[in-house]
Image (cartoon, rainbow, N blue to C red; front, side, top):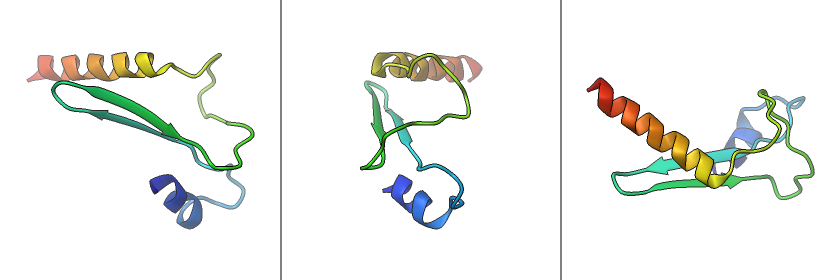
Length: 73
């Protein structure tokens, strides 16, 4: 929903279609989902990586951030 809103109302006409990555967490579970445009043929990024992170790699990154936040408290 947010990706479609952004594409319709915010992004410039010269920009590529938006993809969305949702990172959601609570005390017991971290979830990673992504969304792509229906007719998606390519993905461009402002940061180049040789591969997209896996769902588990993203979950691990979120869990690490949660631990870092707890250490700051």
